[in-house]
Length: 157
Image (cartoon, rainbow, N blue to C red):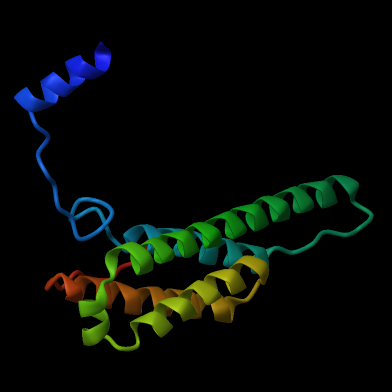
């Protein structure tokens, strides 16, 4: 009974076909979320490298140091993973064959950036952190060029 009522309703009010070239409506993709996550991971890398371990004999100071260190590491790993996820969404959902024709190194650029996310996640390397931000800038420029826009690159730090 319910099925026939729904079928009758569909004949009175048929659904409209919608078309999209990507998973979400146009305008929802933006490399800024990847940049913000990468920048947070870079910030944590810098904070980890700036930490000075206390004397092992000072149990309270050592506990505070280890607590801070573990929090920085957890945030660094979480944000590096988030940056990688955001890049993969751009790569698999936004970029299309027409973009690859215009930017033949796009696959390699994003693949290398995701590998840098992994490096920043598992290492404490200022060099890899900076390389990640450089890759994010390159992807930012390519992304906005595919939309015919010149959006300035900026970072919070």
